[in-house]
Picture 1 (cartoon, rainbow, N blue to C red):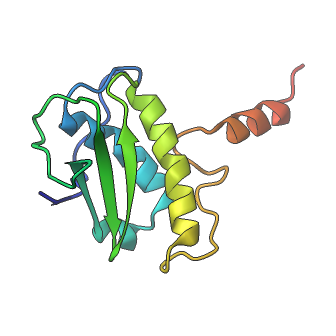
Picture 2 (picture 1 turned 30 degrees about the horizontal axis):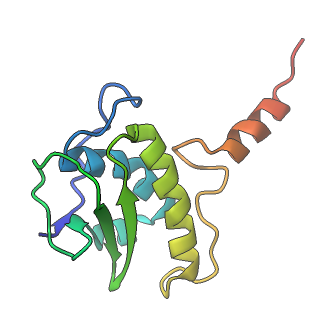
Picture 3 (picture 1 turned 60 degrees about the horizontal axis):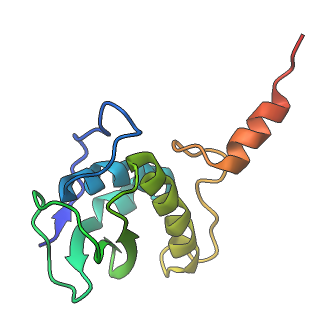
Length: 137
């Protein structure tokens, strides 16, 4: 089962919540997708959670081992392992990094380094650079 990104959902009340069901993975994926993909690419993006045999998983299913988030942009796709014990913010950060590589190697974004220092999900480089720019009295 594929589904387009629902732009109305929000990350949970606490970013440090564990993801429990497949729908939580979609919520955690949104900030990473918005940080890396263009609005036109977001419109052409489909997400689904699949087993290692590419079988779709119901959105209300409880997360377990051996599931992957499949991200399809235009006709190109990537897969990201879902770790059931991972917090949502950690998954978002990991997905953001993987998406950067995916876009840079894709036909639609070949060679582009996106989301660097302007990410909605802070990366260690951005946080480090911002702390060095702050002037203390």
